[in-house]
Image (cartoon, rainbow, N blue to C red; front, side):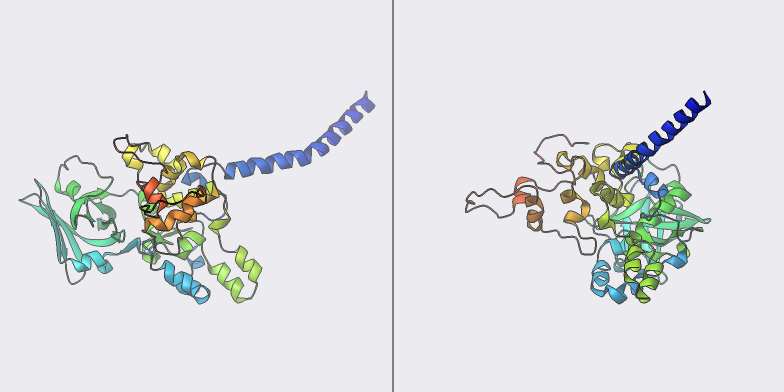
Amino acid sequence: MKRRGMYAVLAGVSSLALLAPRARMQSALQAQQKVDTPMATDERLEAPGWWPTKRSASREDYVGTAECARCHSKMTASQLATPMAHASTPAATSGILREHEQISRRGVPYSYNITRTETGSTYSVSDGTNSISAPLLWAFGLGNKGQTYLYQRDGVFYESRMSFYKTLQGLDLTTGHAYKMPENLEEALGRAIDPDTLRRCFGCHTTASASDTGFDPARLMPGVNCEACHGPGAKHVSLMDAEKTEQGRQAIFNPSRLSPVALVDFCGACHRTWNDVYEMDATGVANARFQPYRLENSRCWGEGDARLTCIACHDPHRQLVHEAGAYDQKCLACHPAAPARKARDHPGKACPTHAPFTDHRIRIARAGEPYPD
């Protein structure tokens, strides 16, 4: 019995040895499949390695764009001219606020004013009898679409109920605020931002606003710059200065090496992933501005396609291209042109002709059709 038991143990060990490589392969495959599965941003942030808005590094690990420009001067200069690089600015240096001595909105019962002063801009609301005001501290958004403002009261950050909109050249309700009439002046002025939301707001509109020691607005860099996407650069710079090139390359994050699904999730850290929007329960036009979600709902996205990732059409280091015809080659990467003769009156722009842009859900939008979720 003892010998038989020994043989059984040996057989079991032998079987495990044979199964071990297969188990490792399956484990690796499962890990890869997990990477290629859309995930919520909170899940991505818990995984090892860099991800936008992550707080695992110390503030000293960030070096700033001047260091990046030493070796990548053209790319840095180009990126600093993009709207992303101007996703936030201190209110005192906001171009919109400096261009307008006063921005007003008259309403019943509340009227609003943003007035420029020698030291910055003051935001106020009045009900016709009483008024309250607060100096603006931050302006979020370059203003291509709009700009929203942050102020503090009793040490708490607030988001202004009114935002500036370019098409209106004036103030209107901030996106996400309820249409319900405020019950008092404090509510009419704006709403308090809870600590987690505050971290997310600054994490997506600034660089290095949070580190391993917590949220620190005093040491952040305004706008979304190099290290917001590539991660803290101090180690990379040190190794490259020491001419340890290969180690230096490995010490900085390169999003282009990600799988198509992970790459879209990467941008979705701030633009909202498919899972983020699903968990928010934002339906219809409420999710129109969440590009990764809309893109992944496109029929042609399938299980992920490198020809359809964010950076397949948009270079994050350059200004957004607004000329629709410039995207023809992107369309033709999936839809080869037929060898047919082009009509004389054809505008020569395939994309805007056959699929005019509506949002990032790729489709032909026909008049009268309901808006797809």
